[in-house]
Length: 524
Image (cartoon, rainbow, N blue to C red):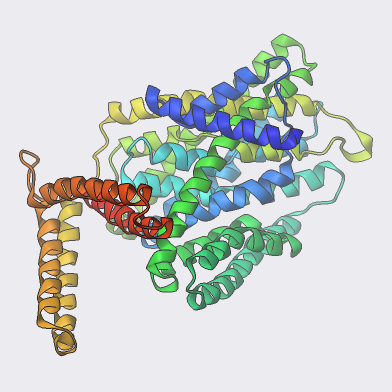
């Protein structure tokens, strides 16, 4: 009962914190971390110690899976060079630099465990990147690069962590062992991901019940990760590969009802998991501080240097990676030089999160030959990087993006592209309707032709100015008021006993679906 109470309590705080963040106009991840930090010192408040295995196999897979489902595969492929430079190159560079800096500051600690700490703090968090980048309205390409980086970089960091930890506890590790570990982990993860695509793609294609379809979607990330872990490969890579492919093929794998229900389910799951993750990160502060026994001046100095190193290594990597790569003519022709604000924002958008905390908690208690090291200090350094990056970078990123005046995505161009494709789709639908015209009453055929014209006109109306209400907007406003009146009539009939509850439920379901379509259309 106590465990259930704590779960309900944490969920309630996460929900209220997210609502308060929206009211205050701040990013909910930042506010939830701060709330967790404060609550961690409230006497009697439940304390939860994050289990690294639970985070890496229970919380991270569904969040990565839904992020991969929402990622555009063509955009991911177009930006693959930039994504790999960040997700692989930058993670390795950060791990090496941070490891060497910590080794210089703490010369009594073996280099291998210092490099393990570098691997822990190297990857920006998938949850933080997705939660922050989309909500502040960054240009679409920047969001794609940041999300693509966050989908892959955890796998790179965890491979480095595994190798560095093995060396720290006394195992002989050579260049060949590192190469083998990378090949087995990443390559095996890709193979497991392909298996997940084949199995769950086939199941989704055969299942037509929306409930069963969504149940399959729920177990997909866990099944893929468990298989990958059983084969000692990267579960993160496997989940990302599966999610990217299934998300790209979702329109032909699932029915419309299944897709609508799945979208609603994953939005709720993502909202709750993200809120819990950031709240739980903040709640770890008291335990982290309690275990510290490092003298204050040394603690402050090492923390400041590590934070500065983590922040500045990203700048040192991103700018050369952005500009030097375009010295190659083929790369410059394919991908013109972006505005100068792009690498600045990407450099500053390096928020760390729960993966860093889970990884540092997985560090060994003792090293080779029973040698000890300041593990509590390493946990504190990782925690400091998480909180500083979320609060400092996350809070100032919207201001920085506005200050740099990044060129926004052109809504007119989006509307023009959508209208052109809608016109093409309408033409194809009308031609198909003409071939089927003899199989239905003329009035029905004419009504469907009017519907096609209405959808085409609505798409072109979005290109107009905002000075006056368009016909489609007027239709939506009036139809919304009509739906409200219809609901009231059905509800009164149910209360008076003229219709059973089942009739009311069916009527409300149809009206709710129509209202959701109206709202989606008005949102553009």
